Image (cartoon, rainbow, N blue to C red; front, side):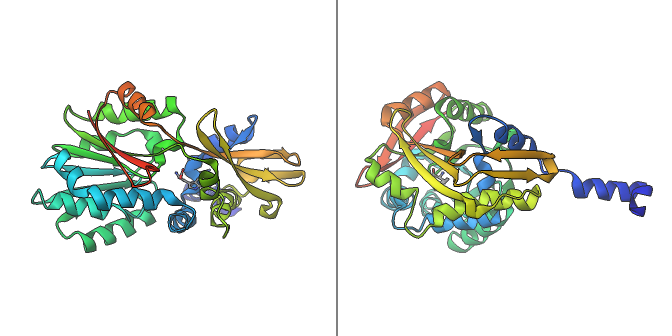
Length: 327
Ligand code: TRP
């Protein structure tokens, strides 16, 4: 305790006990009804690695469908976008799919500055290595950012910009929040700048459900990792064995809903929040939504955010779509 006597010691002590920036959101989520947790918490280094595993699962068609579109149409997309772009990828992760497009762009412009933006520094380090190896004509400038703090970093990207928002990340927002998010991006762009947006499409529940609840249980692990993270970073004591992963298709809201469902009554203490949370048997913590779109829905959100849809590309099954829009 002697450490508390001196100012430097106090500073260190405060460092050690000061809660992470997301603590407030966790507090709000776990004290509301129904209980929720913010989906961005999935993506610590373990979660980012698990998500990478998800993208390779036989049931998770999203990444493969999107990759099919990129492989098939990268040239056409690059042609439609035009030359001279600075490419910014929002939520790049490890940029596993992006190289196909970067290579196509590199055939039409001398140098392709590429700014991968992600919340996970570990994923960004991997993105950089991958892209530098696979697309030597690209210069990689990683940006660590939490989109909760806005898109001001776009102002630091010079010239004409092509913003990539791939995967189904836009689907994690409800439509109003998706519009608000795209509008904030739009505010940082200049007329003529481009957005390439990925959306998953509405399809039969028999295809959707396994994509979010795979046979090997990787998705369940990914979902539960959020609790493991809270145990570690907020000194909580969630008993992971008392939770089951739950995925539901909600056709009225056009979304997959992901929950952690408590099997037995459980009392959880979160030390850094000085919070005790009671969970009843069967009670759910809502961890994510994944909205599935139709083309008119996409047109609506783009238009309301200030973008004009220029062209859409599909995979052969029409399960996924990439949209090019102009600011
Ligand atoms: N954004 C991804 C998606 O909607 C994330 C994701 C995949 C996910 N599987 C999940 C999130 C399971 C929570 C639980 O497809």
